[in-house]
Image (cartoon, rainbow, N blue to C red; front, side, top):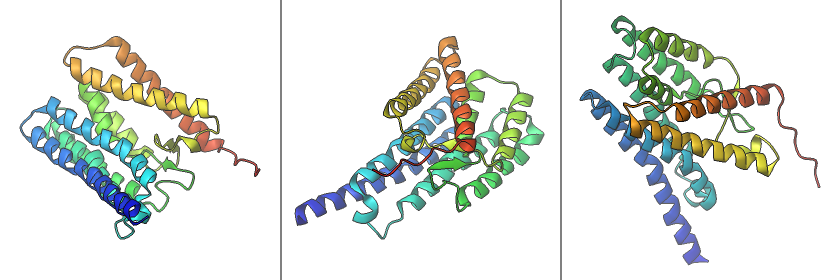
Length: 245
């Protein structure tokens, strides 16, 4: 029993280290942006997103909260996420031609301030495991603006719209907690597969850049629409609790 506990303790610390390593990729992304190495910067951001996508599942598997009770894994995750999902993309806005020069500082400030609000809400992650309000996916947004070569005015309008959506209490899907999306295991698996394919499609667009890929782009637009529509649906039609056996 003691040996099993020690093994869980080591695993829990390794998972916390894995979570914290996302900050390293964030700093490397900032350095790449400062040198106008934009494609490598997005690969660093992608690695940070990959870590964020799977570390919570690992933590629940080993029950890291019980194994290392004096470390707040959720706080660690939020610190790393604020760096990667907010600070890095805000810096990208400042240092690139994504939007017109006079608007860069105000938009970067908007990203930082609205995300500070979003991250610190008591119910930023709701009791039924959804994100409340636009969940500060700024790194993903700027990635697609870059890959698709959208006009700076279009980029500005999108970023401003999403800044407003931080305050609109739509419940957005938490990709690693799909048991709160539907009771159907098949639907959970379908959504998980779609999310994995979205990640692969994103990597594919980065891989072929600066060439475009119409099928990958259409799939990603379809996934975005599905994600938003299901999120809106679950906001107004919450998942009913299972009847007790």
